[in-house]
Length: 163
Image 1 (cartoon, rainbow, N blue to C red):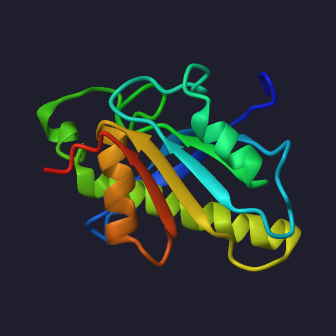
Image 2: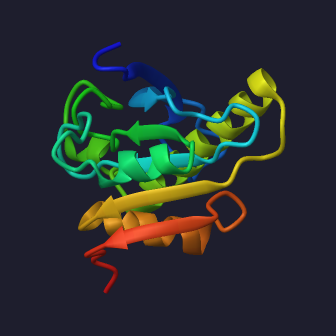
């Protein structure tokens, strides 16, 4: 772990649309649990966009928000960026899975898994989930609340390009 953040990898589906396609890829994430209320704390997800993701040291607001609400702070790298590569090459055939629909489903699968893991490890109820993003990740954040209201309880969308 670096500066209190722990790095992990989550196995997600390459093709979230076709349920018969069981191919997986490793999606990188980080988490910080220093201030987490293990019994009732919410999950705060900072969504990374079309770039190599890292801990958002120049964008401290999401982390401070999680800290204030005793939340588990999560950061998720977007498919096809950084170390979250479904394939070894970016051929046209392989790039067809780089879609908003797949990115939203990736995020939903990750959040579902993390919520279940937190409940399994610490007990307590299903945790509230807040997603945060700016620009394209702001749009993803807003769309997550719209498309997955049973998973995402609140969205903070800064400059979300939704039109």
